[in-house]
Image 1: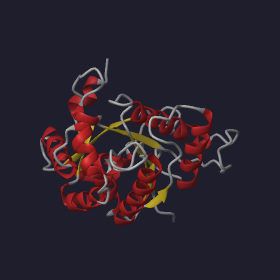
Image 2 (image 1 turned 90 degrees about the horizontal axis):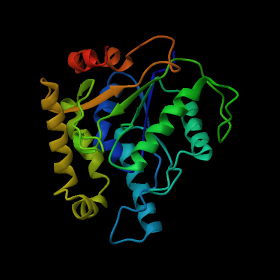
Image 3 (image 1 turned 60 degrees about the vertical axis):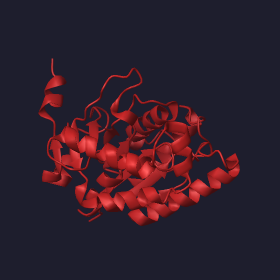
Length: 265
């Protein structure tokens, strides 16, 4: 019997570590295969190196991080700020989805502080939708598959949407048991310390991640460290409404009843 797989589709090198590495590791502990893809090269993430050097550096850092997570690595398809929602990009992302055959796709929030994040999420959603459409030809051409796929969106950067409104999760994953592994994977992106300090006022990207995971843990009302997720509507992705993340993680994943209630008329 094939092991279940989860695909993390995010924008830049280090986004997976900030948003999703804890959830990936918790699934891995339960027998899931991990697949890791940053859609952008990260070439804009430096004030010391030129673009090509930055891209090459960040590619190696991402590969190192994926190795630490024991995840299969897939290369980027676009430079920073060039990840547009186009047929070319969509065909490439859909090929990655079909190659990995995930039951779960983790990606950015659909509404976030920058376009690369939002376009990564849009591409991930449509690529997942197309997983069982044989007449949609991917690049490279990859056969469709037909089991259910569920998409989960991470919380936006700063836990706010672009209009500054606070965002809460629909469910929280306890990442406390794997926090140090998540931290080690983020530390693999060592070129980002100075860049994030200068560009986003982060004292240290490791400290910032610690603070964010504690804040999300506090929002859960239960966990010390957590990652938050909002589940995409199932229509077109699965035959019925399912929640494989909660099913796989059991007590390590709690659903916010208030969020669920807010979805109803």
